[in-house]
Image (cartoon, rainbow, N blue to C red):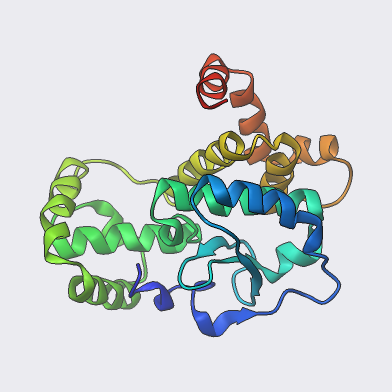
Length: 236
């Protein structure tokens, strides 16, 4: 993804724009700085992306930069921005932050391209746009390091008979990312608000939004589980 990310909406550097002028990023900076230090990051800049309104990703480099879809900045508030910042940091902590932030159709495309490159059959290769799949598979084949080809082959062989429901991988990935964001930040209100905003719900109080948001409801159920309590105890 370090070389391929311009292929995907919301990750191309040309789509980076300033944060909307009416947004006060100072309201969330202190929280984000605290969470950054947990990952060995001193600070990060904040920008917007003009194309993909659901992107929440930490661009790494000389100056780590939090990039959120411009609509998330415009429709959200400091509480949900905190949660989205925690989500971007969680994706960085889990590894593969860029690929984890892909929209569902493009994550499915990357999975299909992986099967194409390794020449392992899976029915998912019949679902994406054939021309785009060919282009992405060719690009992946050129950029995939030699040391990663055999591990990718083993993974694809193990999943050859798995039925990938459209968008299901992206939903499962986001579920994991939100859980990690909650563990990393401890910010219940922020991460729940971010989950609602990613589902498209920004109006009303948090209770009203959770009733409408599948992601937020799933997170609430997990927060009441023994697994969550055990993890919180382990990291506190």
